[in-house]
Length: 224
Length: 245
Image (tube, rainbow over all chains, first blue to last red; front, side, top):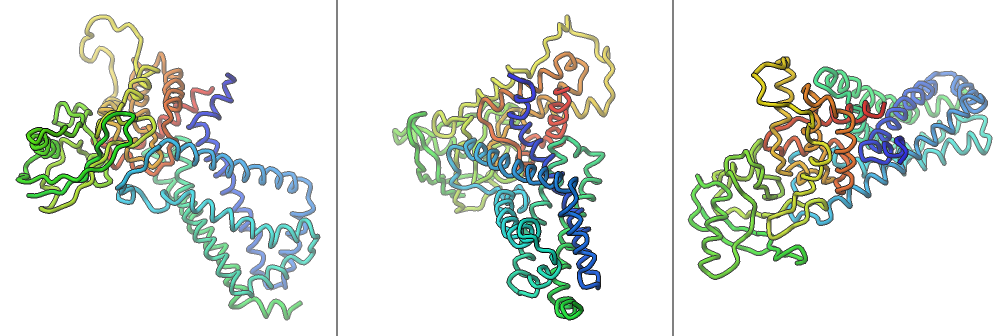
């Protein structure tokens, strides 16, 4: 058997693929947040629309976007495969099983949080990505401002960010354990960097809908 | 003390199995959990019933034979102990206790609480050895090994192969067991000759036996009677990645 195929087909290889794709998706969150923070600029959305226009038109960015979608798919499909084979590994359930006494909430909830993040992703893409990339919406900032003046979407996004935060709280440090980097020497550093991903970045994303809902919405609309 | 037991009874591998209720009377708090089961079995034999089958040998926490799921915890409540080291003082008079065998596709139940752990043996046969000819008994300190390295290898070597890691894991993963065995040999000079093939073969055999993949919940570390650290799993992953190049 081909050595690479054997590697990627092994349980540890599948986990390594999971961690590498997961870490890539984490780096995407940094870029996504940096761009979105332009929505907080009091210029009627001009800077954000310019950024959205650049992202939609630049061929390098569009190529990277295909890669991003591919990695999201690999992360989902590979994760599903691992989940199914892990379920098969315990053919008969325990009558009494106190996993909660030995593990963290977020580590037990990875499949649940992953599924919820996927639901969010579908809604999120339908709400913003499809109008921007397919329907040719030129004024994306107005769409964002209009969306986050609706209580439903603000609550939906905040709940999704809490779920994402739980997913990353386990996932980020877990990825480095799978890559073998979570040693006694680097364990503390990884936990420290992890705070950026499970706390700082979700809060950063949460600020945008909250700001538009409570302060920005009407003022920005009037500026136009 | 009086303890109400709900014990998994299964005649053989083909039997579906069921829970049966027993009451253990006159239980002393100083008894070990296995001694409590011995008392129950004496009563069963007197009544002409088949005693509850369970694995045990040294009864001092070093052989790795005993092991059962007690109230949803591998080796019962408490940390760093095997079932034989669990004492009845950990329970209250009148408590209900559910006793089940380890549950994993790779550990089929043979009878009652006894399981077939030969999947671990096959993983060991796949690579958990050194085939270097070591000759006669060498002098102590003939091969110098730094103390921290020796300590780390010894911590891994403390694994008694009881299977609690698999039993406690939500994925029935054997990663803590395999990592302890790989780690121990990867750290020592005697293990270097087969370092790359060992990790690949042992992981291939682990997958072959249908153990699950690690999702880093660390339930294994929490239930390990020898408190083997998940840093060994990180080392196993490093060894596996390094073996690809």
